[in-house]
Amino acid sequence: DTEVTQTPKHLVMGMTNKKSLKCEQHMGHRAMYWYKQKAKKPPELMFVYSYEKLSINESVPSRFSPECPNSSLLNLHLHALQPEDSALYLCASSTTLDSLYEQYFGPGTRLTVT
Amino acid sequence: AQTVTQSQPEMSVQEAETVTLSCTYDTSESDYYLFWYKQPPSRQMILVIRQEAYKQQNATENRFSVNFQKAAKSFSLKISDSQLGDAAMYFCAYRRGETSGSRLTFGEGTQLTVNP
Image 1: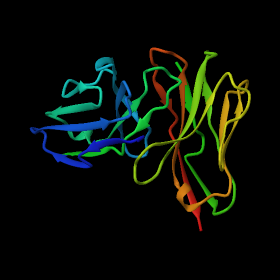
Image 2 (image 1 turned 135 degrees about the vertical axis):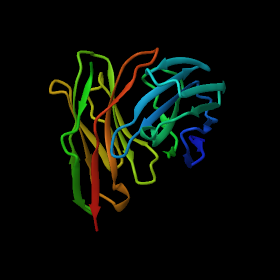
Image 3 (image 1 turned 30 degrees about the horizontal axis):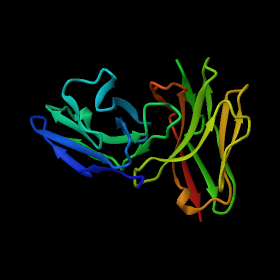
Image 4 (image 1 turned 180 degrees about the vertical axis):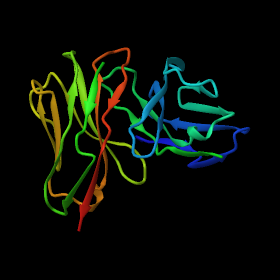
């Protein structure tokens, strides 16, 4: 099983809402990543978790709050977002942080902030 | 800082023909990895092929092969016998070799159209 799943597929939220994105993998990977991708642009790294601990935070605004409750699950909590936060949010995982391991990407959540 | 440049925003190819996508990168590191990712309209990013910098032999995966020119810092992707399913955005990416993790640096992408 080389699959990373993400829910929901699509999400529309107002600027005052609180919502969460979910990412799951059952490959035994211990590194998990959140990326933000705007249309026709490459993904931008947001957060990296290694063994359930936050390893990298790319100076992401506090309205995005990541959480890694266990080794298979990664959440991204959203609060008071802005319209410019509308994007495709991709989750990825790899065996460990070691660069030699491939990152497996999920299909993404298309987020629209109104 | 490492940079990755894809100079062709768009490319097109006829079905069954061959196309080459260009990628150059800039780094002062000696240990690194290079990747080509494919992102079809379904959005899921899929690894097409990878190359370790220490390997002189060019990587191949079925119809996909790379031309890795380390001195020139060039890493092009050749797709042979192009199929309609190859239509996608292709991203070239670089990652410094590091056990504690380093960022994937992506190029801006090349949108490939396959014409029947």
